[in-house]
Image 1 (cartoon, rainbow, N blue to C red):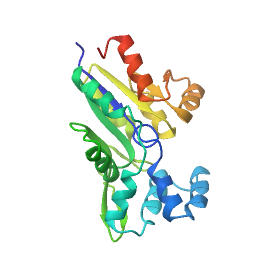
Image 2 (cartoon, one colour):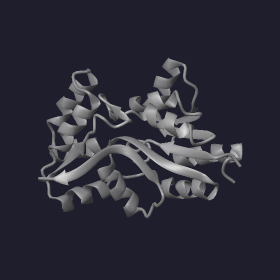
Image 3 (tube, rainbow, N blue to C red):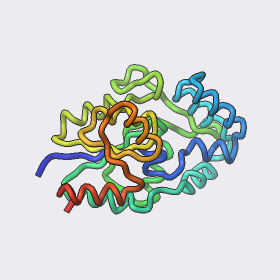
Length: 216
């Protein structure tokens, strides 16, 4: 059997909602205008996220409660288990922050998953990002360069699958052996001539991998 890995984006791919939208809708209405400016190119992705995450102003217990209210694709836990049972390693690759990702993984009892993301921590009623500009995966725009992570994993594995849903995922999609695309990522990859398999959920992903014989 091939040495393989499955790498997934988190916000909008594993979760059904981006954490930054939860914050904007719950605590930071001004973020609606900030979002428009970000999409217009006035803010780098990481600067937009830092401003939103530092505008929560709640105790950590409340923030964790909010994090755990994020809906996820119900099939994700069993899909990860299927990957691992069939000799694959599962990774999460996110341009958000590992702070909320780890809380959700623990909540759902998901183990042995390595997270590549921007380091985050709670302090003074907000979530802060710790960005290391000297890190080998550093990106000025996203905090983490997803393409570099996928390229590094391809040196370790014979086959690297990737799943994503939005613009930051268009870059690693060009490097992965096969990309599963949701939502806006489908149109972006079409425009860029990057091949992909369109999916709506991890049930679709698992069905394809079973047809390929990667998962039995």
